[in-house]
Image (cartoon, rainbow over all chains, first blue to last red; front, side, top):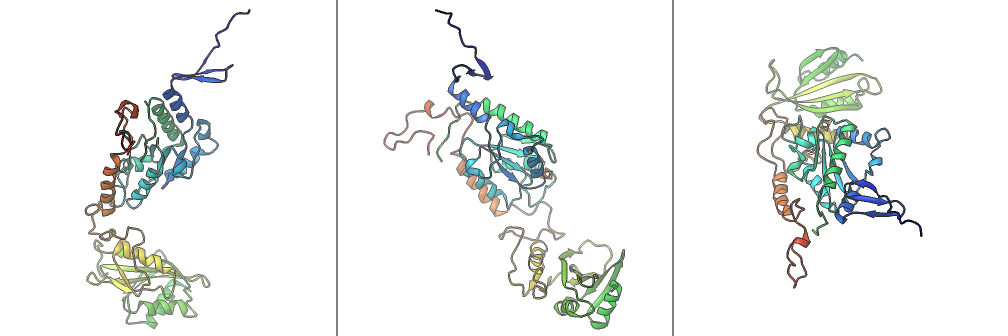
Length: 173
Length: 201
Ligand code: SF4
């Protein structure tokens, strides 16, 4: 009989290990779920103004968000993360909230640009002063507009946040 | 045709309607009384020497804070262009503060429809005879006309759509995910009769 070798495990993420020979993952369930979620953020695009152009650029080949598992979806029903890119006018606020309400849990919101974070330069009668007035925001990406690198940094921050979560399961609404 | 020659043509055709002629940087504007605006613009469109077949833009102006007087409180400005003859003119109809209304020119250029609606929406100038004079940019139940000089930058009070939304959000928030919620398995077994667990709704 030969020696029994302990298979060496590859650490993929905090608490998530991969056993190459056995084609298996090992870890606590919530860590595995978080690892899966963090690696497959599907954002709903909500481009409202100039920031949307930078968001598109972040998704294009130079920066290539796909390599983080970030694939833009055009439907809130398929999305995990709402990227609010641009100026939210007051007329748009109820529409934006409706899109958010249509997303399944778990869902995250990334406010992109000064306008979505705080209203930006548009401190006027017609503009919502920050998207956090109408929905919970997970990551704020400042800038006017933020460069694609900044948006990418925002997604990485969101991944870090997801990886630290404890038992976030769906809830019925 | 030179813009000044067009202004002279207008002056000859409608002498009692023309108030003033402005010329700056080679662009010519003609101030007119508002009452016969459809007739004047219709003549500019149909006259064989003018042929102003294109209404480039239509907008409102609030002169409340303008230094050089002699103008009405409001103006409606028509930028006309002739695609065939490649000449242009600007017509500025002067309106009073008491009665900011003017006849609609949708019958001449159907493209004026939304431009007149926008001018009504933001400036509060009414267009008589317009087929559908509703707001176009702001919500229908908005109060006031924001591009008037007396309108405060941040508006007066909150739009009812936002207050409704905030009331709805308070209701929805009771059912949403809470970061410090221990999760369903940590709570009690819930109401066995309805099969509902705590946290479900
Ligand atoms: S933050 Fe700047 S770039 Fe982005 S939508 Fe606002 S004005 Fe445009």
